[in-house]
Length: 146
Image (cartoon, rainbow, N blue to C red; front, side, top):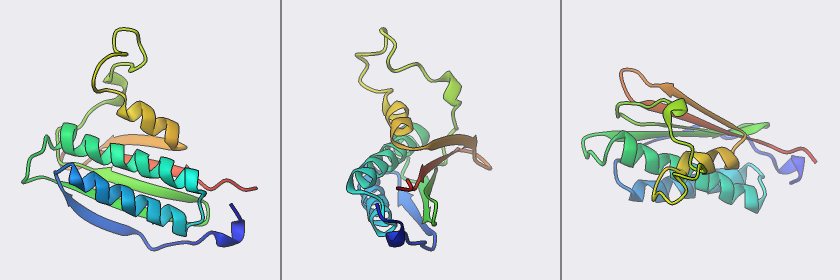
């Protein structure tokens, strides 16, 4: 990726419905912003998948498909990185309490690998309790300098 294609963008903030279709919109936006910021095609798609999985988790595990609750998405690019914040209105969770998805007893489970994959696709993954309730997940992907 050429450094001169890097572009800083104003943050984009969206309020999404607690529906799985919201993950489609979030992924498309993440890929578009990553492309405009000069990330490679592979990085765009990995970042888009990380955002998609984070929004799916917010809808399914955070808001539990509750139509009265929203998922809040904020995405921004600067000269050094892409940053996405996904906030739900659920009960929150502790990352350290999640089961290890690659442990033998969990390997065939139908769910539980999302955060594992997200972590593989981003450079920073942070979770904190949102106020007054919910979880706020921040994903950061740094621009690689060639």
